[in-house]
Amino acid sequence: MFFYRCKRDYCQRLDERKLGFAEFRSMACVANEMVEAHRQVEQQLKEANRELERLRGVPPDPN
Image (cartoon, rainbow, N blue to C red; front, top):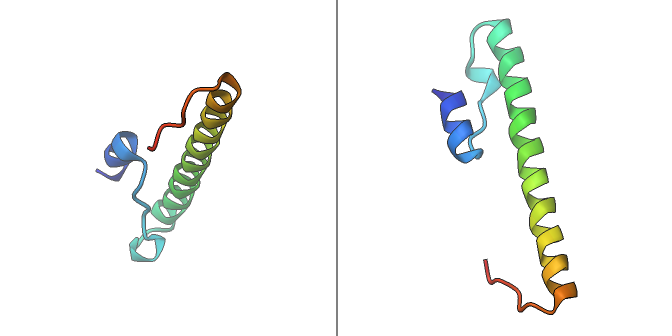
């Protein structure tokens, strides 16, 4: 279910300590890294869009 939720909203991290099997902990670690990388890319995209709007003279979107 975690992977489906991440696909949808990219905000939930897995608590690796709650997973019993080492393989699941490894997968959770990688999944959490993917979630964080996605967040960083989204933030960079927002910043780039703001800069483009600024260069074009478009008023910034409050969101």
